[in-house]
Amino acid sequence: MDVKTAFLHPKLDHEVFMALPEGYSAAKTRTGHGGKEATGRTLVNSEFKEDFNKFARRHPQSSMQAKKLVWLLKKGLYGLKQAPRLWQKDVDEYLSYSLSLVHSDADHSVFLGLDVAILVYVDDILIFSPSKDRVEEVTQALHANYSMTDIGEPESFLGIRIVRDRKARTITID
Image (tube, rainbow, N blue to C red):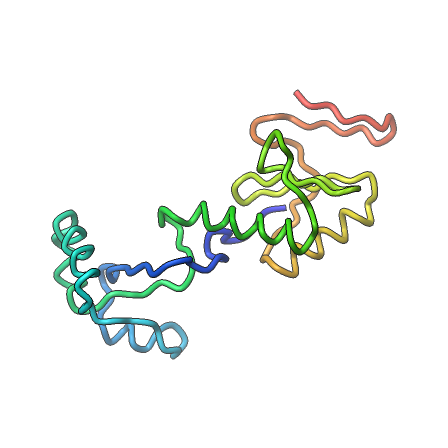
């Protein structure tokens, strides 16, 4: 399974402001995509001014436009330092609380249940179970919470080749 835009799912756990990208103006921001109102906030609070001044010193070109308007992010964004941690926390909570799985003691990216094991690596998920119905049940539960693509049985994962022989009932990895 491949999670589409994994880092865009989790909500941020604190306020993060972002300077407007080049080419955006306050008018474009106020009437966001599809006519919906976008979130823009004037930078006035003193604690944010200090953060902005650090940003301005590093990015003098962008700072001129950003002095007028910044975006308050509501969810993670690719390139945001917190995005991988927030995604891991989000998927961890979902698998632990909604699907009643527990972390493996050996590796926190492996989740275990009575009849299922799930391996999460960034935005890729492998589901293992002796029951095809259980794999389908877990897949549907994941689809209910995340936008995902089922890419079928894995032929390789993290550079490891996986060969499955259904007739002989064997799985070989090398």
